[in-house]
Image (cartoon, rainbow, N blue to C red; front, side):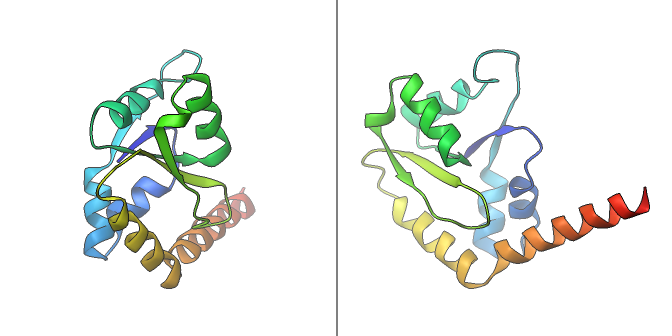
Length: 133
């Protein structure tokens, strides 16, 4: 699992999850550092998806634009599950044999309302910090 490190809450939520499968995903997550270029360094995640057994995680419109611009959109699957109120999407290399594991994991996250809970926790914490200022 690969994601650009721009401060998104998902990596921390996965790593802190009490669910063993979600925690394992968090432990396997590679955060790619941001650099100053057209795609802020996301090309490194795209390369991992295309060359290795990686999945890229980010917002759907952004990833769609990224993969189109780099010429790989026809070589990937998109799993566009709404796991919280955002356009988050997973991009897999086509013919990835283990996609079903992500389907199962995402379904469990959504059904357990964990994503909604994590989102609410973060938003409440932000409201509290703003109110304290």
